[in-house]
Image (cartoon, rainbow, N blue to C red; front, side, top):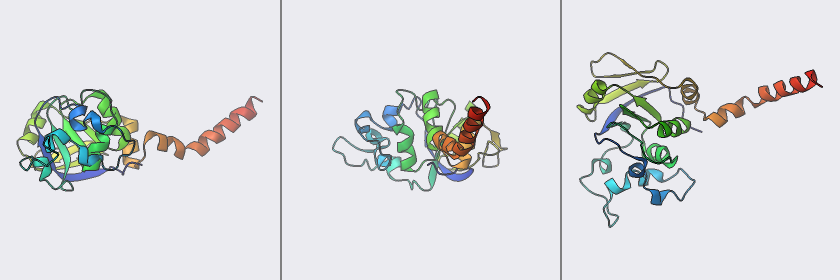
Length: 196
């Protein structure tokens, strides 16, 4: 079950590159598992590690405190490429809870929302301001669908209503349905009795 998401205040990690695809987020050679655990160590692997497998000392992702940097601010067209649920799994296991960009691929968005990672699309001006302050503090309020940073007025964003409800409740879509199973079964019994 995903962790509940209502509000988050965190420092940002800025990755200004555009079109960061799912193979950059989690290379295909690491898709052999159905477990989410440990995938954070493979997140952005080819960016973080050399050909010999040694960490690249100058790569900021290897030096930040992931518990302090829970919001990824990325260039346009984030999460493009092939559909892989492992991409949001890797980002979550690494420590990110939200991704902010001007556009985020539809399939990535769907996979992210179902797994507890909040994708937020903002206008280019807002993204530029966030990118100009790497490591800055940002607050996300999912109930109000607002993000705030610096002395700026709150920036509104949209999240699909059902996905938003699931994130706030800390359930995935299947978990939401399972919680309502008694009501579904009662309705089915009533319909069977009515049309018997």
